[in-house]
Amino acid sequence: MTAGASTAVGASASVAHRLPRRRLLLLLLGGIGLAQGTYTGLGRAGIEHRFIAADLHAVIMVLGFLGTVIALERAVALGASWGYLGPGLTGAATLVLPVSRSAGGVLLVLGGTVVTATYLVLLHRAGRQTHLVIMGLGAVAWVAAAALWLDGLGPIRVTPLLAAFLVLTIVGERLELSRLTLPSPAHRRWLLLAVAVFVVGVALAPFWRSSGLLLGGVGLLGQAVWLARHDLARRTVRRTGLTRYIAVCVLSAYGWMAVSGGLWVAMGLGAGGHLLHDALVHSLFVGFVLSMVMGHAPIIVPAVLRTPLEFRRIAYAPLVVLHASVLLRVGADLAGSMWWREIALHGNVTALTLFVVLTVRSVRRGRRAAEVAG
Image (cartoon, rainbow, N blue to C red; front, side):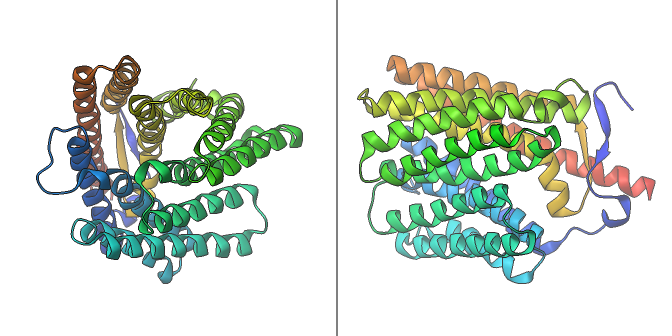
C-alpha cells in the first residue's frame, strides 16, 4: 500500500462483483441533476444560458440532485421496494423540469411525499427517535418548498425551506452519530431548542421574510455551535486516513454553517441586497452542504452500490478547492465584485467535477481490489 492510500472500505469482496442496477440508475439520475444544476448555476451568473432556464438552478440542485441522492439513501435504509419510488420521482423530475415546470414540480412534491412516508415508517419501527423526527421535518420542508414553488412562489422565497430540508437531514444524521459521544440530556435539549427556532424561522420566511431569516439564522448558529462542540468528528479528526478526512469535511462544514447563520441574522435585521443573499446561499448550500456531501460520500456510495471504495489522500484536493472558492465567492459577494464572483463560480464547478471524477475512480479501484482479494 502506498503512503497516500488506505485499504478499500465499504462492501465486502463477496458482493462487489455486481452493481445493483436499480440503485445505479437512480444515482445516475441524481448525477444528471448535478450536471443540470451546475449548468443552470453558470446561467444564473450570466456565463451560460442557452438551454435550461437559470431560475431552475436552486430547485434542480437541491431537490433534483441532492433530493434524489438522499431519497435513495433513505430507500436503502427502509429496505422496501416502494421506497425507491421517491428517488425515482425526483430523478424523473430532473428530466422533466427543463421541458415542463408544472409536471416537474408535481414529481418533486410526490417524491418528497414518499420520502416523508419513509421517515414515518422508520419512526414506527424504531420508536420516537429524535434524529428521525428532525430528518422527517426536513422532508416536510422539501414538500412545502416544492409545493410553494409549484404554486408560483419565487426561488428566493422558498430558499429557506430548501435550506431546511438539507440542514435538518444533515443535523439528524449527525445527531444519531453523536450518541457515541454521549451528550447529556440537557445538552441535547439545547440542540432541540436551536432546531425548533430554526424550524419556526423557515416556516415564517416565505411570508414574513425578515422575521423568518432572523429566527432561522439564530437557529442555524445554535445548531452550528452545538454540533461543533458535540459531534463525533471532534474525536475522529485525530485519527488518520479516511476517518480523519470525513472529520475534516464535517468540522469545516460547521464553519460555513455558522457563517451562513450570521448572514441570515444580518439580512433579518435589515442588511439587504441581492449579493448578500447570494453570500448567504452559497456559504450554506456550497460551503456547508457540499462539504458534508464530500465527507459522507465514502460512507453512502459503498452502502448504496454495495461496492468497496478505496481512499487516497488526493480526496482532499476537491475539498480544498471547494473551500477556497466559497471563501472567494462570499468575499466577492460582500464586496460586490462580479469579476471575482465569476472566478469563484468556476472554482465551485472545478471542485465538484474533481470530486465526481475521484469518487468514480475510487469505486473502480475498490472494486478491482475486492475482485483480486476474492
